[in-house]
Length: 423
Image (cartoon, rainbow, N blue to C red; front, top):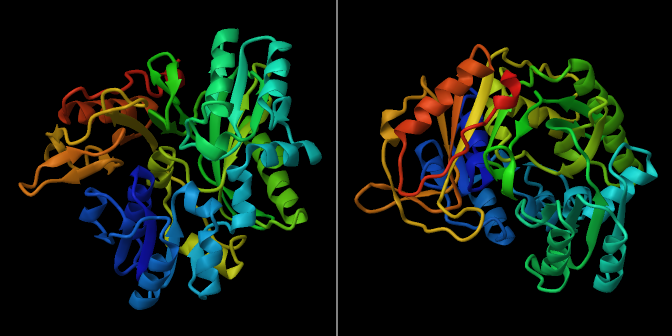
C-alpha cells in the first residue's frame, strides 16, 4: 500500500525509514517532510495544518494509510477529519489527544484515577498563581497548559526564575493561548525515563524504554529544548521499575481514557520520573511518537511497524507479535548555534555523504538543499545521529564518531549523551 506520513522532522524521518523496511509498503509520501526525508519518500508541499488539502491528496493518491507525526494537528483534530472521509489514519482522535493538548486535563485525569504524579495546582489567573507560587519553596516547576513545542516547561531553581517563567507565560504570553492556564507542580528529583506504547483502547503494547536529555548543555544545564539526545535501552534502570511504570501508570491511564469516553488509539508516550526510592511517577503524557526518542526506539524494532499500525486499526493489536533487538541505540542531536533561542538558518552542512548507514543512521530534523545540491540547516535541531552497537558504550562511540564527520558553522551538541548509563 501507499502511505502518507504527516510531519517534517527527525521523528517523521525515523517513521518513514522504519515503514520503508516493510514489504507491504509501496510508495511513501511525506507532507511536508524535509530534504533528508526526500531521500526515502516523495515530499508533498502541504503543511501539517492544511487538513482539507491533506485529505484531498490522500483521496487522490488512494493511500492505504495515513500516519500523523506531530502534536499540533492531533490536538486540532486531524484524525477526526481523515476518519470522516473514511481514510485509514493512525493516531488519536482530538478528544484523546487532549491528554497532551492540556496539562491541566492530564493532571486532573491522573488525580481522579489515582495514577502516580507530582502534587500540583492549576491557575487561570496570574495574581492567584503568583500568590500561590510565593507560598511554595523552590525548586518548583511551571508549565504552560497547552502545546509549546516542548518548551513550555520551566524547572525553576530560584524564586526569581519561577516568577519570571510565570510572567512570561501568563503576562507576556510567550506561548500565546497555550499559557492561558498554568500548572504549578512540585519538583521531582530522580532519573527521567520515556516509555512509548502502542495503544488501542485498553490494549497497551509498550515499546523499548528510552531516556531523553532535555537541557541544552552538558550536565543537564541550561534551558529545556525539544531534546538534545536519547538512548535505549536503560541498563542502569531495573526492569521491575519499567514494568511497574507500565502496570501502574500507562495501562491505568489507557483504561481511564476509555472510562472518560476518550478511547486512545495511537502512540501514548509517558514521560516519567523515577524517584530516588525507585518509584516511577508521571511527568507528562504525549499523544504521539516522541522526538528524539523515536530515533532510538524504532531502530531497535525488529517487527514490521506497518503490521503494528494496521493491527491497531483492525482491533487486533493484542495479537500481533512485537520483537525488539538486544542492540543498543544512542542518538546525538546536532543543533544550530543559539538553539533553543533564536538561531541562523541556511548554514552549509558538510560531511553527510561520508557517513554510511552501517556506521550510523542520520535522521534529518531541520535541513534543506539549495540549487547547487548543498545541504543547509533550516531548523534549531538539524540532525539526529544514531549509533547502534552491542551495548550503550559501543553505540555511543559510533554516534559520536559519525557526528564528528558532520560539520556546519557553530554546530552545537552535548558531549554527555547516555553517559548516565555507563556509570
